[in-house]
Amino acid sequence: MEIGDAAAFLSGWVLGALGGLVPGLHSNTIISALSSSGFDDQAISMMIIALLPAHMALSYIPSIFFGVPDPSAVMVMLPGQRMVREGQGLLALKAALASCLLATLSCVMLFPLTLGIYPIVYPILRPHMGYFLLGFSLIFLMRSRNPLMSGLVFGIAGILGQYSLNSGVPDPFLPLFCGLFAISAIASYKPGAIPDQKDLPLDIGIIAFIAIGILLGMFADLIPGVGSPSQVATFATMIFPLETIGYIATVCSISVSQAIFSLSTSASIGKSRIGGTAMLSGHMVIGDNLLILLALFMVGMALAAMIVYLIRKKVAKLAGLDFSKMNLVLAAYLFCLTAFIDGTGGILILALASVLGWATIKLGVERTNLMGAIIVPTLLLLFAIFP
Image (cartoon, rainbow, N blue to C red):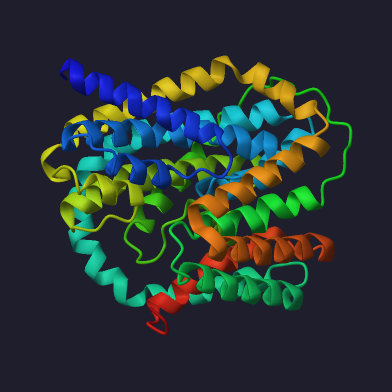
């Protein structure tokens, strides 16, 4: 790697790390800005492959300790915040980091295998995906505490998600997820005593959940319309008994698996399910640069995990603060960010999503039912009901 490439890689990594710490700022938004920044294709490619793992690892800090999720970390937020209230926020963070590291290494080792599997499996699975997804959705609703109310929330969230994805706003996930999960949580926030966060050791049993996440992410890259790790994790709960730590490990592993294997789908079947990979393919031929891309992703993830691990105790101290005033600042920030990126259309989606998320909390319905916002549009897409 030349000096210019190394500088571009480091710059992209810093941008990704800072972006991961900023609540609600998706990596695709940063990459879109880079793509129109005037840098040459080689420099932008180096920035993107560094930005992706850095943003992924750092985004778990606000998702766990502040409750403001990146779309890819929505499902980490729910068990993560429960663990913070139990004094186990550090354990949740370490589970996320360990999962990212082990999943990265495992996915790189499995990568050559997927180059041969994807072209065979993709044509077989694609025609039947809608039926699998519909069946899983029905099972998911029937297993909830209140199937009728859960179905209502699931359906309304689906309508809102369909509207958001077809509203024409630049980043439909930003107001959708910030409203459903962040603003609604802020509106329901009640100050309470948060215990000191204990630096507990991880159990080796986490490896099984990492393996599950890797496999789910590997095959999720083949499914049209399924691009969110949170969406995949929602269906994982129907098949596997995921407890809190296992849930976090699975979601984080899915994120890594999807990101890495999206390079494989791009090279083998010409499909890029991850926005960052799709934009990367516009600046370089991914199939001709797989070795360097995989190596750089591993370096970026290792660096991010190491830094987060070193500062983990300082981050954990923030969990004990009274966020009453901080929440007002976060709400104002998310409103302004939505207005800047998505305009009045985004503000409308943010308001509707916030009301639905708040009502879900007040009704005592599991907030995982809000993932209907992306599951329903996926079903409509797979059955070709709506574009």
